Length: 472
Ligand code: MSP
Image (cartoon, rainbow, N blue to C red; front, side, top):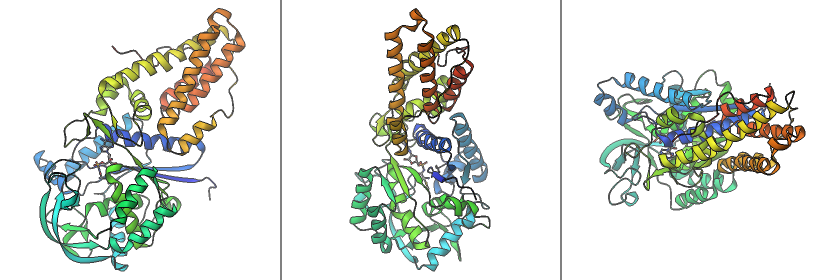
């Protein structure tokens, strides 16, 4: 048995009906920063990513592309993985809900557990459904008769479905959130979900006719129905670990999750429906649900359906993944909605990276290489406590601000002390040590830049080429 602390972090599994945009790159980046931090601390870390493939929409899009559902899904999920690679996402597993070996046994086991707990019953659903959200809506929830997220008119459907008795679990869900057994962060989202639960939780339609989603997971014992995609998708957080399979060692080791990282638009699924399912199945609840804000463009959520997307690949090709990770960590507010434009990105790149960190590294290491005969001695533990406090609370903006605060201090020290005039060896050595500490602190946010800076200090060398080339 390892005495390392286990740390399990999940990201939403994305819909494969469209390619990923900046909003998705954002979630993956902040989660990756956290995963890297925990690995650095020495925790036994497991970081999950995936795709949510058993949706009605996929069928339509595959058809439009003249492909079979399988071909289409293979292509899109390979695209997800290729973006993650470029963005330096360090996930340990990529789960696909179409995977009959890895995922389906868990989804089926969950369904059977819900049936056993008498949490499933047959009924008729009559109402509204937004295919883009894969969500049932009430009239009250619509804005001018349209889906509040996508601005599209939902379908009116009447179906015989199985229902999940969510209402029964409402008091227990409320208690778990209030007591902090399942923390919902930040506080404003906790209050939002408590208010929502306070207005009364209704039972949820938990299956769809097979004709609507032929490739969905069949309801055990009913060939005409498939499991509702959200029920199926949420289970991926545990099926990935082996729940429902013979080898469930990871499930025993990593569940309950330390963090589910989710956007505010999927809060209810994660803090009402999912805990309801887990309670019914007699499983422990996740420890924390971290709810981030959305990237908006021109006042609207960036979304493929709305059509206002920035493609992360484009920025990576031009500026590099490290620059994008920097921007997302520092300039996008983690808990509020943030506007992002290509111009704001370029300004940050030139100001903070090319002229900022890149220039600083080059000045210090040029001085060190010229004036020091050997590399400096490196500090043992040098991560400041305020940085640790911030990252432990998932306050990614504060973490990045602390690092750039150190960069500004170091810049100021050089301006004031003018080491290029005095050539004071002790001073130059101390600057190199401080740069090394900055390199260390950069590890979770910009892993490659961190490694480069640390290597330069260790080898007492100036960079051969600038870390970041200025862009006009
Ligand atoms: N498939 C579901 C999640 C199932 S999890 C068991 C889903 N997929 S999604 O493709 O629509 O993407 C969901 C995630 O991306 C959410 O966390 C959502 O908040 C995030 N984002 C989508 N657009 C976003 C922005 N514009 N900004 C930030 N995050 C955004 O929902």
